[in-house]
Length: 144
Ligand code: CA2
Image (cartoon, rainbow, N blue to C red; front, side):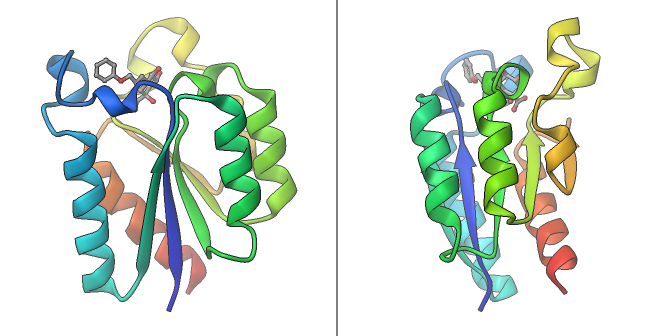
């Protein structure tokens, strides 16, 4: 059975509590529960982790090697800053899907650059919480 890690970065623990116009009103717990439910329907084991700390995200990516078939990563603001996350993704040689709730290309200029885009299999953005199901389908399709 494939197993996916759904990894969420800084401030995503606040989902559903503030800025619903940008990020929607669904909480991270709701999203994680839905990922697990959808994974079960598709025959995938899903584990979820959120951290506000760059090093913990790096550690989680390293630890995913040998445990998970792939990673769905919403790196939050670290998307636009983190060479460490990019290097971690490159080092594990696991398929990673970059995910954003918002359409980062339609927002401020600084969000248009992703340091991780070049080392992931693809990017999903702008579909809100529905993007997580899209990412599960995309990762499953990539592995088949
Ligand atoms: O659209 C996304 O998913 C982002 O990864 C979210 C990040 C942002 O820095 C990226 O540019 C795009 C920010 C997550 C902050 O989440 C909040 C949720 C509720 C209230 C405040 C922040």
